Structures are given as structure tokens and as C-alpha cells.
Length: 75
Figure (cartoon, rainbow, N blue to C red):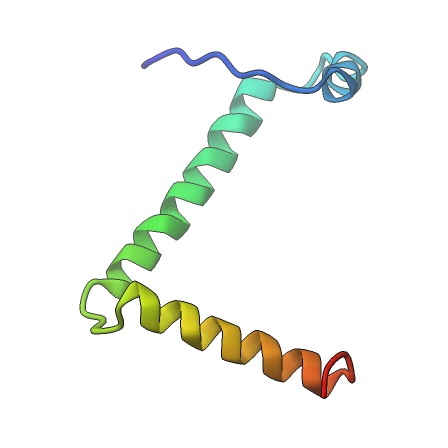
């Protein structure tokens, strides 16, 4: 297994120090696996997509604008 060093903010380190019973490396490993699985799923879903990055950005903008309009934030 490969070792990795992480930098964490001081307040997080203090919270972790208050709970020495927790295996923080295992928590980090599980979180990284979960994120990696999500990325793999996204890669599989997008593998056959014909949308360009520009298309995806335009679609995202339209969705955000529609949500903002529905909530009365823009007209």
C-alpha cells in the first residue's frame, strides 16, 4: 500500500486530536474510494456522450438561469 501525506486546517486537526479513538486514515481512505467510485460512474455515463464541453456549459447555464427565475431571483 502506498503512503500519502495530507495537509489539514488547524481547526480540523484539533477536532481530530479530540478523538484519538478514530482511525482517521481509514476515514480518509473510505472517502477517497467513495469519490473515486463516483468519478468512475461519471466516466461510464459520459463515455458515449456526444455533448461537447461547450454544450454542457450552455446547458448548465440554462438550468441555473431557469432555477433562479423559478425562485424569483431573475426575470
